[in-house]
Image 1 (spheres, rainbow, N blue to C red):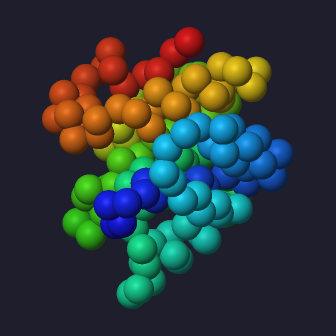
Image 2 (image 1 turned 90 degrees about the vertical axis):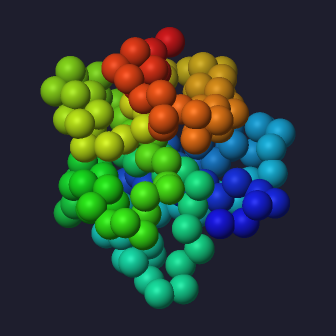
Length: 148
């Protein structure tokens, strides 16, 4: 992981959501590099490559074809190589079962995709500004679900 810039990955099968995320990220004034994946298979193939540059944080959509975000989360958390990567679930779902399942399986935070640009920008900025080491050591149900 590069100390000079935050390595951010986004895995989302919706092209419009990827483009919107990228647009929002470009407006946030932090040193960052964004890598986007169209699905969890692409993400996991990249992460498992020998020479992969690991991210600081992965924004992971839940509802993707082939391998769901929930399955990718389990795979990430079952590999010691990825233990220092923060995972932000980034989904349209606000179902209690999805929130609970991803909490149990080791996600660092759960974000329901907002409907407007300004709220999305605020959420992404806040999530990226969180001290992840502190957050992961203080993980609890109240700090897990980011609700606006």
